[in-house]
Image 1 (cartoon, rainbow, N blue to C red):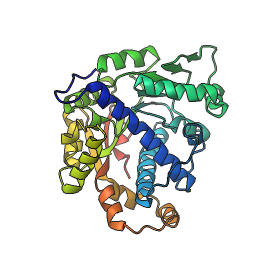
Image 2: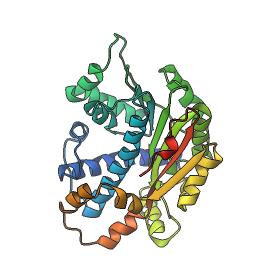
Image 3: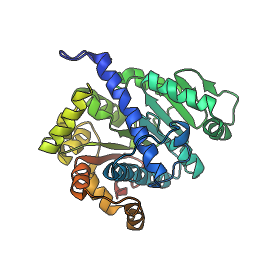
Image 4: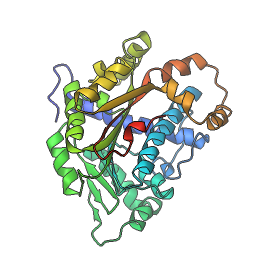
Amino acid sequence: MAARQPFADADTADEAVRATCDDATTCKRFATSKGYWKDSSLQYFVRNVGERKAPEINRGYYARVQGVNLLLDAFLKKTQGHCQVINLGAGLDTTFWRLQEENLLPRKLFEVDFPTVVARKIHHIKTKPPLSKPIIDVHSTDSLLLESHVLDSDRFCIIGADLRDVPGLDEKLRRFQLDPELPTLLLSECVLVYMTPSQSSSLVHWAAQTFHTAMFINYEQVNMSDRFGQVMIENLQRRRCALAGVELCQSLDSQKERFLRAGWDQANALDMMAVYSVLPQDDVARIERLEFLDEKELLQQLLQHYCICWATKDRLNLGLSQLAF
């Protein structure tokens, strides 16, 4: 566990971070209900669509989901599925079900999150056949493990762990057949920012040391030193949610530098405004017709304060450095 901060209770801070999982899931649920993108599994984690979200929030989530998926799918196709994926701080993410539906599954997909979050996710899977059946369908042995904080099958594994405890994380992943020799994609979305710079650097360094051919995709805040960024920080602080790693979110350069310092060979970063502008424009035009957007300037500010940073190592010379938007 992280050391207790002098003016904040660590348990309260962790609880606030866990609550961001629900925020993201309910926002995605609303956006999919409006038709921004399709997600047939999300309804089993969040039954109700919930209260209306502003159009700029929906477009922001659309850019996030499409941007991350574009890089993830490019990696899976580049490796022809001969790879593994580790989703760090996965929450109630539905990537496994999407990839299974689209016949894009890697050799194995690992998810890691706080044990309490994992327990909730596993409960949903156990009690809802539309979630459990796709896991069973790609599982060929008798040894499917299903406990309160662990699910392990041939192609999908969910582990309860604290990402700040890197040796513990490494031990748990290896216990469930993590293969350091396989090309590996690591994914984190608004996760590293809740860790101190030294904690996130340890995690990123571990990944660089463990996998010789890999890609790390990180989605989180950027340009946080301006007034808009300060307001974002203050809003989260009011919810007892401190951005412990915000100093690494000052610029696209500071985002890239974290990976380069930790042993990654190459790093790139784009703010979400840039990502939004290079997504397939016919689909962007489609979603822009879904809702009238009055506050175009607010959307632009929002997208300029989030980014996708991706870093690569490529000892197998697969051409991972070519993966980009």
